[in-house]
Length: 369
Image 1 (cartoon, one colour):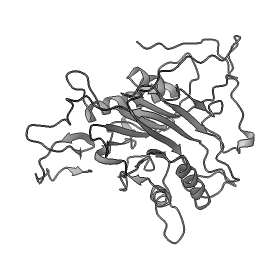
Image 2 (cartoon, rainbow, N blue to C red):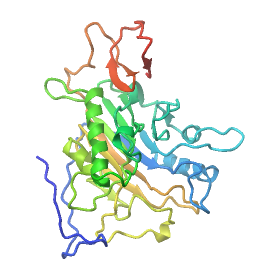
Image 3 (cartoon, rainbow, N blue to C red):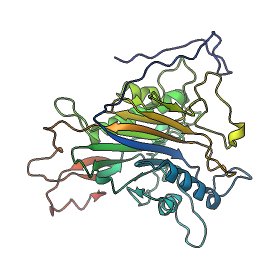
Image 4 (cartoon, rainbow, N blue to C red):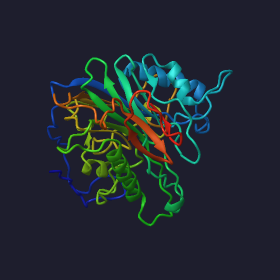
C-alpha cells in the first residue's frame, strides 16, 4: 500500500499557510544481508552552456572530477555531459570526464543519432566491481520540449545491467535520465507532461526486464534530473510520484540525510548564497530512486563542493543502498538453448535477443553489449 499526502494549503511563496513542524517518519531499514553500493547522480551543465561570467568547461571539469572522485561512487549517472571539452585534444564532455575519473568507466562511449536528444546523459561504473551484461536505451521516452507530441523526438535514457564480480547472483539495472522542461503549448501542464515521461520509462523498463511468473524482477537504480519538484502539492501526477506509484522508492527517505535542507538545484549560486528551505526540506529536481531494494542507508546533497569555482547549476547527490542477492533458484532469463543476454536495437525499439555464442545476429539489428 502506498500513501500520498495532499496539502491544499499552498501559496506562491512555497511555504504552507498552516502551522508546521518538522517531523520525519522512520524510514525503511536496508537489508543488512545486501552488499553496500554507492550511487551518485549529477547534472554537470553542458560545455558552452555556462551563464555569462561563469567558468568554462576547462575550468569546471577538474572540479567536477575531483568531487566525483572524492565521493567515489560505484555507479555514477551524469546529465548534460555534452559539448566540446576544448583544448588540443577536444572531445565530448562525457569522454573528457572519463579520462579524469579514478575508478569509473563509461558503459557506452558512442554518439547519439539525430534526432534523439540529451546525448550527455550517461552511465559510468567501476569495472573492478561489475561486469556489463547488457545495455541500451529505453525507447519511447519523449522530449516534450517539442510541440506537438506527434513531433516530439525520443530523449536518450540509457540503461545498463551490471553484475557483481564477487557474486554473479547480484544483478542491478541502472537507468540515467534527464527530462526536458515541456513546452508551455501543452494543455496538460508541466507536471503532468513530466509524469508522462516517467510512465514511458516504466513501460520501457517492462520490456527490458519483464517480470517472471512470480513477479520477480532485477533490482533497478534510477537516477537523474527530472525537472520536477513537489510543488504544486495538489498536483500528484508528476515525475517522482509516477515512479513511486510504479513501485520505486525515493532514496532520500533514508536512515541518514545530509545537506537535504538545501535545494539540489543551486541556480549557479555560491554556497554562501544557498539558503535552507523554509520547510527544512530543500526542493529536489534531482533524484535517486530504487526498485527491488529496501530503503537506503544514507542520502547526501553535496551543496558545498568547496573552492571558488562553481562546477554546475546543480548539486551532486549520492545515496548508499544495499544490493540484494537473488533467490537461490534464480537464473538469467534465457530462451531455450541460449547462454547469454544481448541488448539489441531495432528501428528505435529495444528488446532482448538471447543468442548462442557465435550465433549470427540479424544484420538489420545493431547490438550494444
